[in-house]
Length: 131
Image (tube, rainbow, N blue to C red):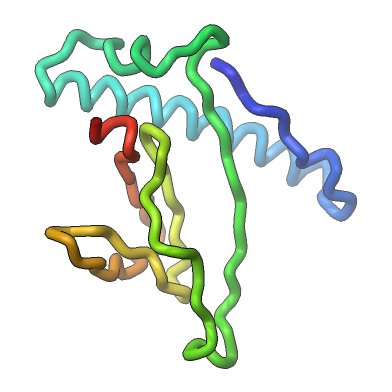
């Protein structure tokens, strides 16, 4: 598995315990993504491991994490958010904040709100799987 270089060491105000916890969290997310790829293979009638092999480049599967915080705005009517886009990757595991919404999915040419669900993971299949 190829893990892009982390910049976590460059963030000065993180404790060693936090860094350790995040490394373990990333490891577990990778395991979950592997399981999801195998389940997709099973449901699509593909050989187990087919999608992992298809996504493996010369360095193996690429796996990255991004931690973002979008606090509620005192003037939400002035906030545009991200431009409309689709995710280019394979499987995206998205942990929504149950206080700040904004995630939408494109269904039949219309953007539809995805309400945040407490303690849940949105599993988004990106453009590479859609192809």
